[in-house]
Length: 376
Image 1 (cartoon, rainbow, N blue to C red):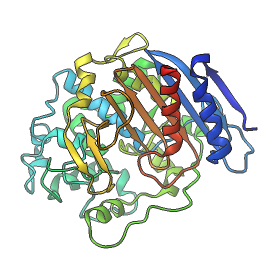
Image 2: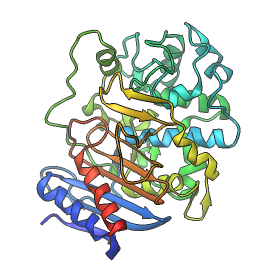
Image 3: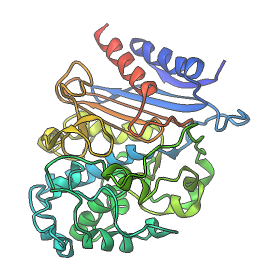
């Protein structure tokens, strides 16, 4: 039996059963799941081990690189600035970042960053060595580059570049890096153990990732998808390095666990408020559902509707019984799920990666169990 620890209220027992099933039938090694309902924790579970050798158990304070689940934190940071009136999501990026107007991007708006529709899903200049970790180099190159398609016309997943794009607007407006702004305005007020740019003091708690059996396969055909996924390239082995952990890559290198993700994203499920802290207004949290793009994503090649920073439920990708439901997931399987109608927030993180870029059936089985618990 895989050791499972933590708390689960009786009403939400189906989630614990689904979590245990992931170990028995989906080959999970170590993982955590957390759920709030109407603003209160109902599930906070962790279990398994840090590696396939199963020598050390996953602990209550274990954290891990959650890949693109980090994007929900970057999006929330921008939504907070919009809620405060410091950023207009429908204004040109160049209003805040003048250099970005170069090469035909004068009309690209902040919302295009939030919906992966800015046409900058990859880079023309080769990203080699530690260039991905060099904020000034990355943002300078992105500002100079011509878009690969008309901004706002459709989405093309900005797997690694989205965080730098959103983050530079945050930096220009606040004078702080996105990681510092997020820590000061969101993570610290909520007491959440989630880091974008992780200090060395936390390294001993970081669980290594077990890479997927099959790496991301992209044909070398010069397509937008191929160019997006190969430059910058996604390197699973890099996440163990100190350089990766310390850098701010707000699209991909957040470190936390299910509890800390839910501690933060509960605000987005509960009218901007979580655990006695009003992070933003209810209207500000509702802006997630301001639909931006709809159709087959140029990079992911799946049908998706993007709102402001999150994938939103639609006829193309129904997420549950309620309208105001959104999600995003990380490479390998991590998941962030928010239902504003049910006031439900769920996260799942794990160390054994599958090959999917935006979550997989392990996380969605927990979402289905959550609805089973609520609906009886």
